[in-house]
Structure formats: C-alpha cells, structure tokens
Length: 198
Ligand SMILES: O=C(O)CCC(=O)C(=O)O
Ligand SMILES: [Mn+2]
Image (cartoon, rainbow, N blue to C red):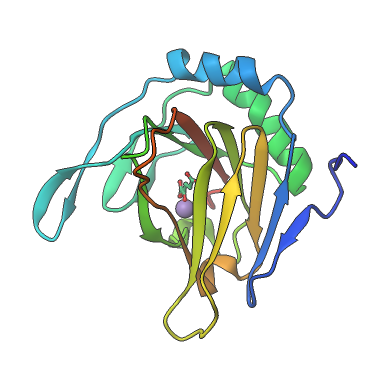
C-alpha cells in the first residue's frame, strides 16, 4: 500500500509524542538528491561547546524567509532553491502545514552526526510541526525521553525519500539524535522544514 498525502503515516509509539513516518513520499528523489549535493551552498560551521570552538560534525545550510538562531548560531538565510521548493511542496502536503524555512544537513559519511536535542526554540512556538525529509543513505534516528519521562529509547531507520513528521508535544517530551556509525556509510541529506513565528 502506498501512503498518500492526508494519510496518517506509520505512527511511532512515543508516549507524549506524535511522530509519523511516510515512505516513498518524495517524487524524483534520486535526481533531487544529486541536485542538492551540488546546488546547495553547504557550509562547515563552528559552534562553542564547553567553552571550546568546535567544527560541527556535518555540513549545513539554512534556507528560508527569515534569520534563524539555534545552538547559539545566527543563520542568515540562503535564498530558496527550486529543488528545495519542490521537496517543500511534498513536505507541506504530507504534514498538512506551511513552512517558511528549512535547515539542511549533509552527513558526508558515518562519522558525521547530530547530538541529542529537541527542536524547541521559542521562535517555533509550542507544539511545532516539523517535517524531516531524508535523501541518500539510510541513517538511524533515535528518540530519548526528556529526563522526567520514564519511557524506553526508540530507534528508527530513515530511508531515502521518506518524511518523518514530528508534531504535538514531541519536542516538549523527547530528544532526538543521529548517532555516528562505524560503518562505511554514503552521504545523506536531511531537510527539516519549520514554521518560524514572526
Ligand atoms: O538528520 C536528521 O534526521 C535530524 C536533523 C535534525 O534533528 C535537525 O535538523 O534538527
Ligand atoms: Mn532536530
């Protein structure tokens, strides 16, 4: 069965959260992946961690209508790119919401990663809807309850052309991460579409 926009998606069992996975949700995903690899102005940013300046373990790009601050980094937006806009159309259809920005991450190989965090910046408002689009290599995505919630950790593999929609109180109750892998993993691009409040 193919899931269509408007379908519920495969719900993940996350108490106090609402997460759904849609498979094969991006038309022409192979081509779009290749285009994003070359067309996006990828940057290798540095952040301050425990008082030390450290290179982020991935390449990033913020695209959207407004400046976005996360992890102490103020990101001036790159202009919308046509391929990203096509992916945004699919993300909007499946999540039933409109987005005005997207954070793109390029995981060059298994050594690239993203640490535990929640997408809970004030500018996203309460109970934000985030549509996370996956292109390229499959990576393991993990959820961990915030300390006051005693629930098991959950891992899900996110394949090429899938969309993971996180909504409801997911960001309030859960952290998520993309761990490093010792395996030889090909590049992966993830796009998290967000709606910033003005
Ligand atoms: O790469 C991913 O699947 C997650 C990215 C993410 O959590 C973020 O950009 O906030
Ligand atoms: Mn996130």
